[in-house]
Length: 279
Image (cartoon, rainbow, N blue to C red; front, side):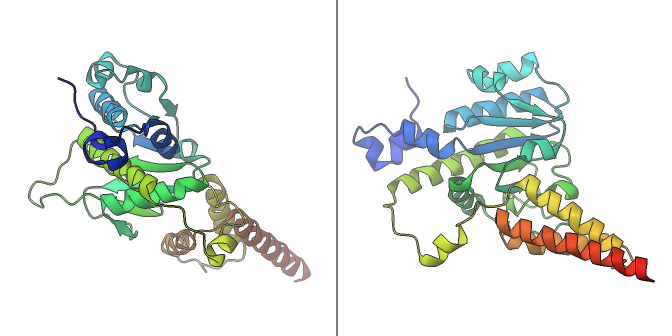
């Protein structure tokens, strides 16, 4: 007995016999599922199977403890090609390179004050942003989830609301849930007729959105500049930098805006250097 897929059950166009597969693949092809430091190869395989069932194909692993591994292949249950094509990275910087948006998945409240989205809203926003480039959905370690420093790389947190007294969710199950929501979001987007963009939207995206690596370069430049001008006056810089990071991430900067801001920082450092020389 063949299994029914979500589009064949609920999607009216699919029910009419029209093949949605090419459009779905295109809609989901720019979504990276990023597993950060997974410790159990079986969970990697389960994640690959979840992705394959829902039509996603971009699996990225950051410092997996055991990969490749026979257990991952066994749990993938037919998604071997997805495992074989998985990208293994040594750092989160490498995993997010080129992405225009990154969300971190969490099953509990964390110490990083990020905008929080339900899985459905998060999936819809990721799919919408994928029109501008690759997007990423991050999943953390089985034992402790994403670290605060990793969540700070994200524009929003996707919070899976579980039972407070038993909130532990298996990594493979979390990936399955979010991949299902991504598939639903892609199917819904295919149903929507194209509407003319507002003039504000056209102006807003006259330049491509800044990528994760461009934003990180800006944040390093900002931190160095604040140190150069002694902005912190000996006080701890972490809180200020974290707030500034959240401010600029909310602004949804494009590439030209990042270049302008970095130009301001460069001139600030030059002016500070000239002031020190004249003293």
